[in-house]
Image 1 (tube, helix red, strand yellow):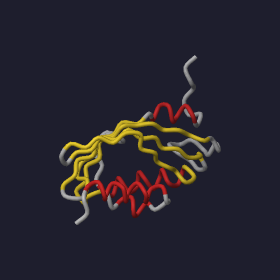
Image 2 (tube, rainbow, N blue to C red):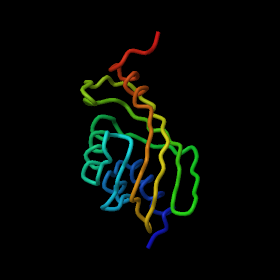
Image 3 (cartoon, rainbow, N blue to C red):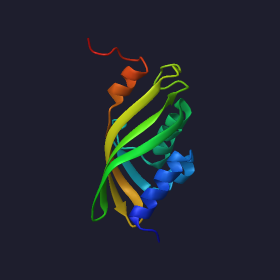
Image 4 (cartoon, one colour):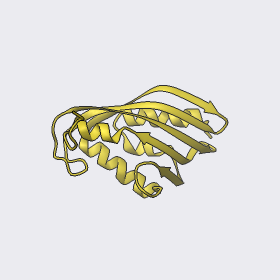
Length: 136
């Protein structure tokens, strides 16, 4: 069995290689992902959410800026970048290069994530693609 650190590294490499399937190996079948919808998402909803991301942004890339481990829990400060090439949240493609910073906490059981808490600057993303006006 891989370590949580190895599983996270493989998922990170999978994402940046454009392999959603490889990325999703990070998550246990019982995953509960908090922060991107009103209710926690299960694995099917997580897949759907990331399929939307991979469809709307050309070759989205992740960068980790800080990773802190404590037992079976990991906190990560990250940035996702990409170019808005298809509809996202009702906004047609703009061709805009986006930068989406966020923070996530992963709780592992063995080598898979069973619970994740995330906060990303979705308002900033919506401003970047023109869905929401920037403050005056």
